[in-house]
Image 1 (spheres, rainbow, N blue to C red):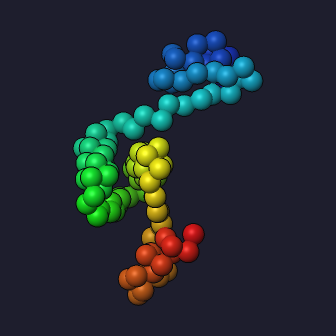
Image 2: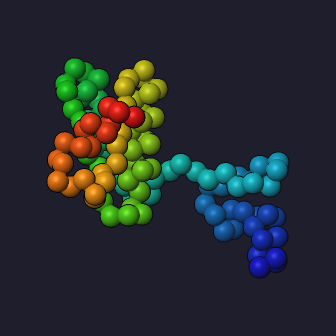
Length: 109
């Protein structure tokens, strides 16, 4: 393990794509979303339509670990860079009998 870690410090691009090693020997990872081009396009189209006056929302669904949070972060970046408002919330399976719970939760945060 020690040898592998030393190899990573000496040449991190050998193991990790688009990384940089900081002066404190910490790794900085790229924010690129891989394999989500269609989803990114959908989010960006909704953003463009909204910026032109349309009232839109985006609901991001999927299994755990598929990049929902990263996609939401991308949408948040688009919105906040344009001085827009970004609301997010997370589904809680304990509140499935209250269908509007997530809407209320978004505005309570």
